[in-house]
Image (cartoon, rainbow, N blue to C red):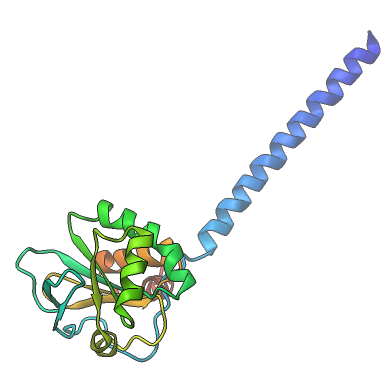
Length: 201
């Protein structure tokens, strides 16, 4: 009987110690989470400046519809131009994210996919990945106008035709950082966090 009581007491002590350790670990995870800044899209040093009017180009999509990318929009929607390629593995991993964003952000955003190269290869890419719902443009001048040097790359243009965010997109977090940068009115999340760190208090 005494042995059972002792064993029970030891077990309760172990449970309490374990609970304290778990609480300490949870607190430490919270501290780390606060210290680690969210990863935003990688801004390249060269290229168009945030806050400037985006170049307005009239292009034709693969369904032979004339589109103007850049410039003010009468429907009040912002435009995300996502530069992709059939030969870019990272681009392919982002396609489900773009499909989800196309639906979830439809109230304020229209997504256009842009590429260049062989038209037959582009059409096969659209077919194999179910991209028929997107506006899809094949235009080398469009990439040059937005100074795209690496893929996947995105530019976010507001309804007035102003460039609000841009950068290399390698993940869902990078893409959503463009939306958040526009909402906060900053060039990038990194700029916002640096400004916040410099503010007193």
